Image (cartoon, rainbow, N blue to C red; front, side, top):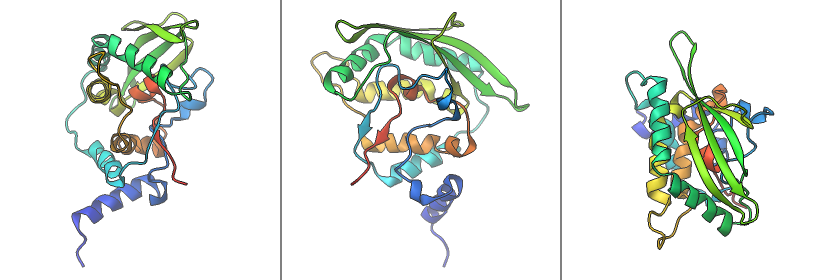
Length: 236
């Protein structure tokens, strides 16, 4: 019997992940650097965000999307500019979203007043790193239990509390993923309600970055840096 196209897709997915049993159980981009002392233990404005399990097809679709892009990656300076510009143009939106998460969910804990050194990295064909250093700062008011300021600058941090990397595919997608999350889940109007990310959205992101679990790329996804490791609740 001739295999169907879906069979090829699933085999490709299982081959890269090692086993189908892990589907739906891994988080978004768990990196080797997550155990280092200088790596933040959670997202900047939130942690422990969980949603109901999504569709397995969304996970596979996210995985296969890694192979849809063609052509050379833009220069790393361009990637850093795009990411920082998208965030800076919508800082108030992210500030509001972070404070909403803190108010609404008891299990969400912010990182507090902190400076992150965020390196945007691209590995070239010689396996050398092109790197741009950026600084992400947050100011947190302990009395009101809320963030009062967020700032992302294209400059080397002087004395960062933590250092993280956004590398290769994660760097290429960073600006788009900030925009997508903002437009889908962060309310523009104060009278509208923010939303937690949808289950299928989380599954698709898992699939997109799942190969990094196997190949050990030491970097974090831009959303992981901001709102921690997104995951789905495990069924009883």
